[in-house]
Image 1: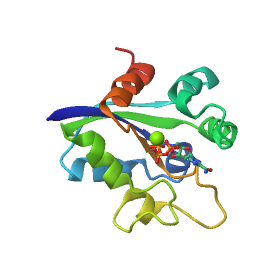
Image 2: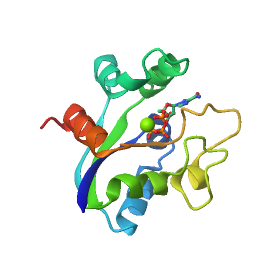
Image 3: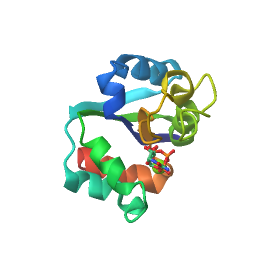
Length: 138
Ligand code: RTP
Ligand code: MG
């Protein structure tokens, strides 16, 4: 089924000049870029985006990190793209993410935190609809 998902290139990815490579991997997998913009997130926007993580120990450092520079927000479209992009991104921690994945190939692990894992991808159809609304409006 054709789906849409919300992908973010996080501030570490933008700063390291990896946006192009990440987009190339999304396209190489056969997904279409439906929307794309670079934005400086606000605390309010991130509070909505990360509402499910509020109160967790990593929440505040995560929000600070996401405010540390611009992010590139993307709506990607394609068959099973929600699961497919998360597979392409690799597991949360770049240290153990499988080679071949974005986080596994490009994520740094020398003394950096787990939050600096280059990309975000929606984890369900409900999250995708909610997050696309937050970053792009209806
Ligand atoms: P994402 O939401 O960014 O696609 O990543 P995910 O589903 O793999 O990870 P999730 O559990 O939703 O966590 C969201 C982001 O919070 C940071 N994080 N830090 N223990 C920690 O320090 C920790 N755990 C999670 C990561 O940036 C993660 O992507
Ligand atoms: Mg998540």
